[in-house]
Image (tube, rainbow, N blue to C red):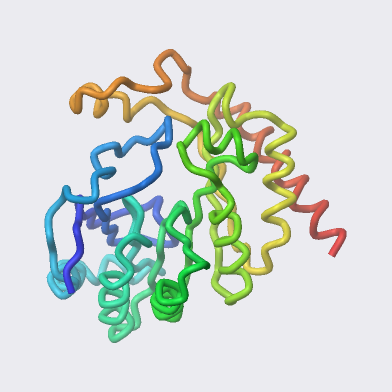
Length: 250
């Protein structure tokens, strides 16, 4: 089984626990204004690679992943390529490798039983899902990404119901995702996830702007300054307050 692959990274340190072999798949329906990988958007781009070929590359460096690391599939959007994910993770589990999906959740299709069956096969081989929640408010989420967040939030709840460990990621962008009201609501929502294991609150940066220039695409957040990391500490605390409130009510 082959997948459309944008790139591979042998020594990822921010894509899950330990040192990771990171597979960036091609294709994503989201158009996040702060996306730093716009070159992964098109479904027909990238390089076609076999799952076995990717595992061979992992095995070459396997000793480096013995610190609690493993394989992370990110993107792009991994859930757009479930058949490929299933084969890759099947090969990984033959070697007892920790598996992680980094997803926006946008591809979740609870209305399609066949797709859900494939998803469940993949989740049975998945140790961790890193879920990027872009915005808790539906309208603001749509403005930010061109997509609604309904099925993204349902995906989070589905993962929790299936007992899959969840690692939430949220990027704080000045003037867009830094409102305390919505950060608190985000915390309150994720506080209801029974399998929440970690929370990354990440600062917006402008490092992706150069790619937009190279691709001839206008950068949507031109003029927005990088997030102050000192302010970020306070913003994370607002999310944590929401988590604590939700858990106190349970």
